[in-house]
Structure formats: structure tokens, C-alpha cells
Image (cartoon, rainbow, N blue to C red; front, side, top):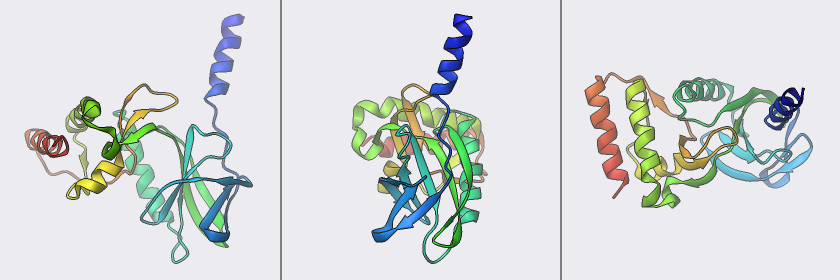
Length: 198
């Protein structure tokens, strides 16, 4: 009986607080479920927020005032799921749509990586990136948008999530349909690693 209580407690500890509402308030700030959500990043058509009720989660809101970005959300979810299969992305917890400033907007909730971007991680964390690149090459997954080192370093994080141990994670999932053979893909990641480790 005690085992079942412990198991239920562990499952409850990992249960995510659902996103019920997302509001855009003055100055470009967002509220999630009525509480002010701190921005922890941004990108093309999205804002990344710290979930105000569960700091182990990040909420990506696919919206800007010019265009609601539900198609970008769908692409992001597909990429996250592909990366999740090999432990290369933080776990996807929830996805959905909400009305933001009167327009439909997509959102995803992922476990937040407690750590740093590769830009700030330093050379001692490169073993995690080597492992990440090896897993991606073996799975036949090619990262897109790798021409700019700065952007790549910002899109790779080294740290831990609530449900995984330490590792390197892709936090802004941009993938391409690879036409490379397994050997070419391994060489691609070897070259990328060499470039990033300088």
C-alpha cells in the first residue's frame, strides 16, 4: 500500500499545471492562467515564458501582433516529437490553442532545461553536446539553421529537466529532411562539433 502511495505522489509531482488562458497585457507582457509570466526567450513568431505556476515548465506562445502562428506551432510540435524519441528535446507536456488579444494563437508547454545555453556553457559541457550529436546522427535527424554559430549555440542547452538527468537538448527545434547518408550525417555532426568546440 505504501508503494502505491509513493507512486501516486511521484506521478502527482510530475503532473503539469494546465494552461487555461494566455493574455497579452501592456508592454508586451503575458499572463498565463491570470498570473504574470516572465519571458525567458523569444524567437520567430514566438515568446518563451516561464510557467508562473510551475517553474519547471516553459510555455512557448506562437503569436505576434501581425500574424497568429498556429502553423509554426504545428511544425514545432512535429519537430519536438521527433527529437523527443532520442532524448534530444525537453519533454512535451501540453499543446493547444488560446485566444490572445482577440486572435487565435498556438502554444506548447515543455519541461524547462535548468542549465545554460551552449553559448554560456563553456568547454567542460561539450561532452553532452558530443553525445547529443551522436544520437541525432544515429537517428538520421539533421538540425537545420546550423550556418550561424551564435544562433546554434543559443538553441542548444546543457542542463537537466524535471524528468531527465543532465544532457544537451535542442530547445528551438529546426529540422530539415536529411538527404545525407549515415556516413555523411556523422561527418556533418563531427564538423559541427569541431566548429562549436573552438
